[in-house]
Length: 153
Image 1 (spheres, rainbow, N blue to C red):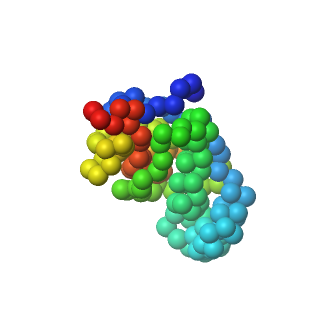
Image 2: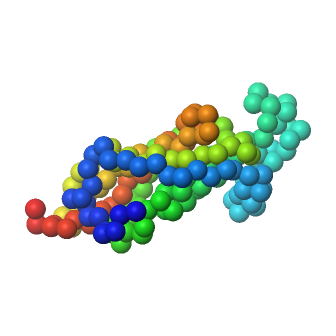
């Protein structure tokens, strides 16, 4: 983990790191259904899922997103100079099942001055989550609002 808090100027396009892994459990899926209210049968009804093309219950896409976000927070110490600005894209190209282990590669892919706030810049951080087979199960373009060390520049 980095010791000093990073500012906008400290980030470089192309820098990346990998989080640790975490196994998605049956309990994760049930608790996510309870918290979100998403009881869609392809997540929670084994007999229904058997009648569908995938043939198994799948984890919620948002569960995968939430767990990958948690893995990112665990990999980095809190940085008071950075906050979420939004998301341009969230995709779930492959399913996650109970028993799958996921991890996330985090990469800075763009860096732009903020068009209105000279005190901050915008970083695009792509977050690619894969399972134990190396399949991409989530892809996110996360926009970060980053404080500038020298706003006059």
